[in-house]
Image 1 (cartoon, helix red, strand yellow):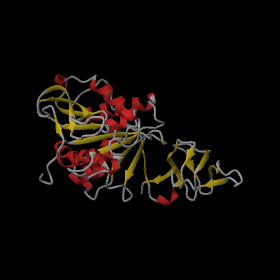
Image 2 (tube, rainbow, N blue to C red):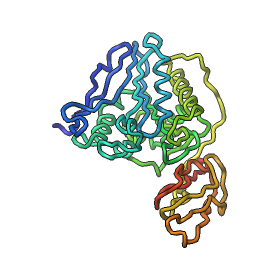
Image 3 (tube, rainbow, N blue to C red):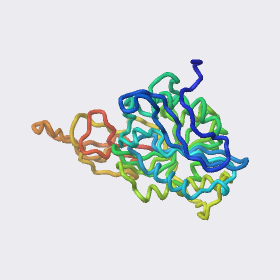
Length: 334
């Protein structure tokens, strides 16, 4: 195959007007589907000429607020009420969502660390390649909804990539403010270039992601925030006018300026946490205790912050592995 040709196809015509439900078709033969395909359900709503938006949930399979909010929106919007196109992918890593796992059980890969992908690779790699080379560039705006999943809890925030293209960065910031989450996280030099955010930046397409709490369930406050955020952006783009009004508010703008400020587990054991997402902490403040639960003869360690900042996220696990993130510390964007 030519290197830029994708094996993934849509079984519906994305250029057709109307309300359509279909699949992205991944040709992958395994024990569960030996002679067929793995499907990623999609909802395409299109009418006339206007802005086009791609809205994604379930990038990681144990993050459910995004898929829930997308399904809510899909049932509020009729094709004859919009101007433009809304392509909804409630569960991008569909097999991972059905498995309630962060990574895709078809290949054990992390969707948001797979870009730019590989057309001849595993399912996750093929899907990343399809999005980066075939799908992203056809849209004016992209939203990617995340949460902390089973492993962590985030303070609710939108994520805007700080691009060298200042026009693109400004558009990302506008989207983040319109979305309405109280905190905006700037993805700067420490952003992972294997993420969907980076793929959108390479394509020059305005995009935001969002982090919506976490814990591995469906928090109604976070789902409500995501639903309203989507409707705010559809309104802003003149694609769909909802009855809910845009809310103008103050935003706290932060970034991960010093990766060394983040606390990681020093071994395998229990993190006896004293802090929570959204709190402001000071250098020297106690984050909690680390207990070597399998080695009770070892004294427990008090973990202290080496830098001041805001707790953007913390681990949601009791038992943690060495190297696992315990507390992610951010600072005001400079």
